[in-house]
Length: 68
Image 1 (cartoon, rainbow, N blue to C red):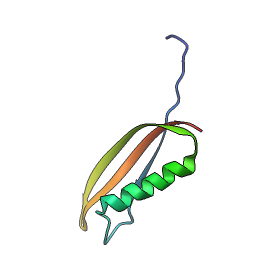
Image 2 (image 1 turned 90 degrees about the vertical axis):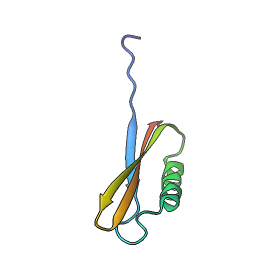
Image 3 (image 1 turned 120 degrees about the vertical axis):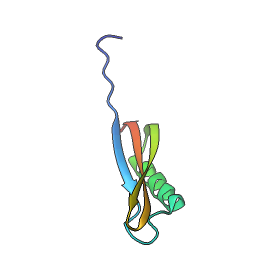
Image 4 (image 1 turned 120 degrees about the horizontal axis):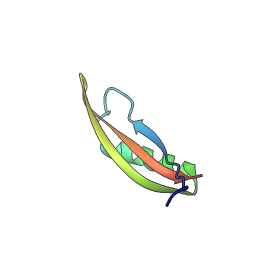
């Protein structure tokens, strides 16, 4: 498919550092609200990352999407 271009957008989110940073359910709700705010988009992928900090595990989610 020569000549076709495809643009993908992304954002990453995590809970605030410190107490409660490991709460994946809260993170998923926050990400869902952010996706709703984007409007009419097509979600291509969600990737969960875990960083180990002095406060414990600190998950983040990267959302890849197209449209809008």
